[in-house]
Length: 260
Length: 229
Image (cartoon, rainbow over all chains, first blue to last red; front, side, top):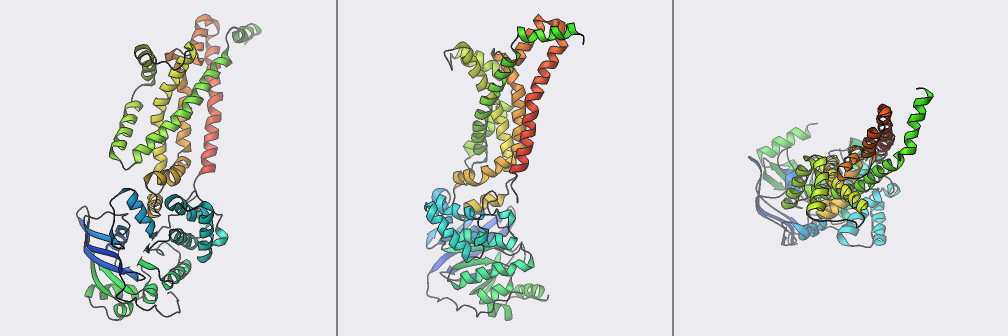
């Protein structure tokens, strides 16, 4: 599936402090209890992969962390600070949390370069000339520098998603959220995006990744979180999880996705 | 048509300044169009804002103005604003009525501009707003930099329809005592009933000549400005 030949990164030192902390998070969509008392701590520099069947609440969980989804009860803290409810404080917090979407969501009326510059200038007050320099460096890093003046629609899905990663990185976030970043991509483009993500993980970026890419989970994650029915059913390091899952639900899920 | 009829018809243009009357309609359309676009954009922003009181104010405005006949709004501008409340927009009598008519046309068509823009906002995928929020833009910058530019491009065709309606509705300014094409037509019919059909056709053709290019231009704009996704 995914060929990333380097060894998995060493698990982060357990004494390092918590960067993202969810405590007793509950959320309902009408009668549906999509998040049921979720406790999750992500340490600085840690790469956490969230997997689970569709409808298990993993995307919703990911989206609560920058408050694109509100929660009914519980607390979410970033770097020790609880998420603000609304307004400027929330906008500032979101700038610290990079988000990569399944459907890329690049600003369709702007060039690739403008996409990466916008947030820096308008949300962080970086000078346009400096922002442009940072943007070009980032586009170079994700390998789409030569596409800088094109519109998103002129790029392939894989290129668009790499631009989206650059756009999020431009805000110099403390943590990056990936909500099924490769699910909308053609198979041949998945690796180019995963390669960028693996590179980020190696550079020590804190990442929370919702994905179906088990190869990525095995090779880049420090921890796999398995969700089902709105609950965290199991948490383990990738090797343990994939070779010896403890719960029946995880075994059942893995048997379904790993047989072909 | 014999020569006699043609001469009679042509003599109309010596007696009455038809072009000047149409020019008034074009001016009414121009000023009211720009002001309605500004007010309508403001209303549309209010209607998509996260602030409930602003949303309420925006939708109340639209419901009220869109469902009131333009003639009544126009009469209100003259008899209400000027006649009763004594609001004058210019010391010059003619200019005052012209400006009151622009106000009437503006407040009425702003409601339609707002709804055209809102239909444009609906063409912008929700992911665009989420991405804008995710990079730390709050509502107003996100609306101004990401949502509205795409909404405008998506609503060029419906905005064109509003402009066409506005062009023809500018004749209602006659109700505000503005001497424009339709009021001139009424005068001409009164004085020259011998060529009544020709007068009708002249004014109909005049409006067709103004409106058709607007339609062609907006269609071509809307094709060129479409946001590729």
